[in-house]
Structure formats: structure tokens, C-alpha cells
Length: 150
Image (tube, rainbow, N blue to C red; front, side, top):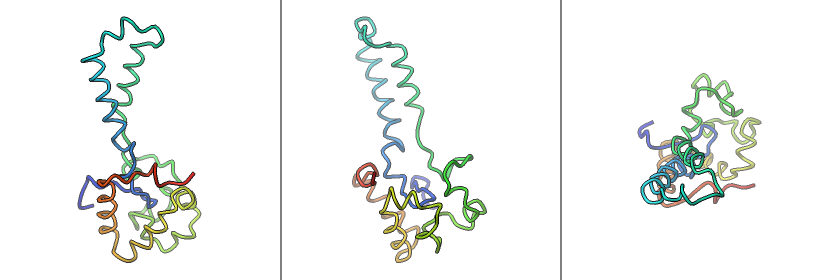
């Protein structure tokens, strides 16, 4: 990859548009700092919550972020179990001729139907340009939570 700040999923979903990529991590850090710096008095007046465990929870969330499937070592997703991906023949399913009919990408095509458009766009402009477009969309505020299908 040209830019380590560009985050993509092997399956064709652009991870840079996921709010959990870093936003949850950053917000938990910010909330923890705010509470410790400005609301530490809450520990002495709140009976409804366990303040210590609440801070532990924020600490846990502040250390979490999604590394993207490209960087995990133990694949849980069927896509990462594909021999073409394992053998590094392809860095993305969007580059595979079988993408539209592959059983391993059925979940992504159903839940994130826009990956079909991504596949066709990669055919038009290439994978790297596609990633640049998706990164631009992420910076403009496009988020997976708003465009995925349930």
C-alpha cells in the first residue's frame, strides 16, 4: 500500500469508513480524561454505578481499535480463509473475477451491497484509485453504519 493510513478490508468493504476504526477508541480516551480531570467528584456522589469499573471500562475501550482484517493474524472471516488471499495472489476480493459469485463474499454482498459497485469501480479505475476515492469519502463523513444494510 502507498499509504498506511488507508484502511481497507480484503472483502471489499472500506474500513476507513467504519466509526469503530478509531472513533470509539478516541472518544473513550477523551471521555476518560474529561471525567478524571473535571468530574472526579462523581465518584463520591454516585450510588447507581460502580465508578471504578466504569473507568476500567473506559480504559478498555480506549485501548481498542480495529486493526482491519488485513492486519490480523487469526482470520475469523471466511474471506480471509480464501487461498488466493492466504497465498497473497490477491490483496482484495475486488480484484478477483469470482467476486460476484463467490460464497466467501456472499455476506459482504448482502450486508454491504455497495461492494458490488466497488468491484465494478475497481475494474474501471484500478484498486489504488478506488482506495483513494473511498478515503476521500471517509474524510467527507461517509460511514458504514449509514450505508450498510441489515
